[in-house]
Length: 243
Image (cartoon, rainbow, N blue to C red; front, side, top):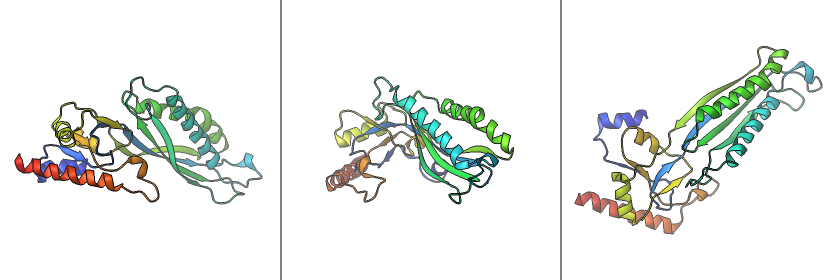
């Protein structure tokens, strides 16, 4: 957001933004919002033979993660009617977890990173509140009964706003013209598109490659997709020269 704000101050304001994330060269005008978190659990170390003398941060974290999984499953059981997103609901996922020092020690610390991919119409605050309430009701009382210095803290790591459809925007019209697309699409992954849109710049996503081939070992872009991307760039340059 800070860099985007500087664009208008230091450079000519762009008429539109085309983000080249992998969409198979489909014109995408919407994606879910993405919100990342880090939850840190502080326990009380003790020998694993004396579980009544300490608080195992790893096991407390596991309970929170299990609750996050339950919230995800609740979302999956209630898909949004008519949604174009795949999957057609909000998702919650835990991507990183670390903690503990030895197999025979109740862990003092455990930290995990998780995210929400928010479907339009859902409330991020409501999901956050459910997790906070679960911790307050089910974990903190028994943790504090052993030692008041134990606890659970969650901090926000990032906020990626959703890209909202703007039918007929200059970016959408141009990309549909250049690609010959009859319709627009949506994607579940996030981009900086929502940030450009919040700054008042018409934005779409259109780029070569498939998201299922990205963000994994040996990620690649198929040659046929590269060729489509080159052709798009050629047409874009020609359009810019003529207009």
